[in-house]
Amino acid sequence: MWCSELNFNRMTDTTNCQLYLITPPKFDPKPFLERVKTAFDAGPVACMQLRLKNTGDDVIKMAAEMLLPVCHSYETPLIMNDRPDLAAITGCDGVHIGQGDADYETTRVIIGQDRIVGVTCKNSRHLALEAAENGAEYVAFGAFFPTTTKLETTPAELETVR
Image (cartoon, rainbow, N blue to C red; front, side, top):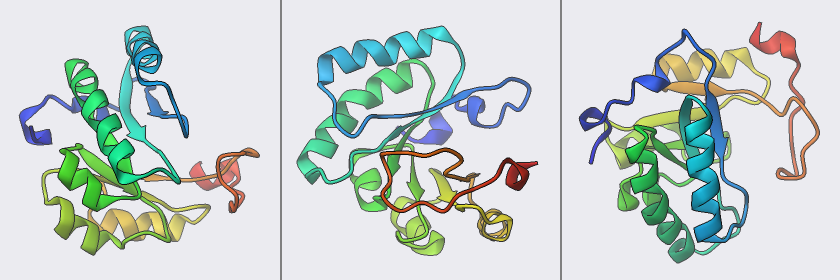
């Protein structure tokens, strides 16, 4: 099922704050699915990113197959982290790429024109403008706070997004 076939207006609705959920680096599928449903029931969720680093492709594919029906039942897109190839194979609704991943043009060729592409811009408004000009549906900044999920971060200040 393609984004154009689903009502993914949550990604473009700017009237309310919405969550951008990111999966933990590892999770037990059944209990995690219940937690995902609870989060979706709590309020608007713009999208969910499947972010399984240092994990085999089979595990990532299985997680995508498990999460896609739940996300779609809540009209919420599932975004694959870093891997446009797996986003295309699994039918994810889009992909989030970092500065060290495939470039926007290559990513768009791999996943097609009707899926979401988000781009990490670290702390750079210039990178954000460039990504938007290329056609990215959204940009992300950070890290704004210390994190244990990324070894190398570029500190971002709130002024970056004001």
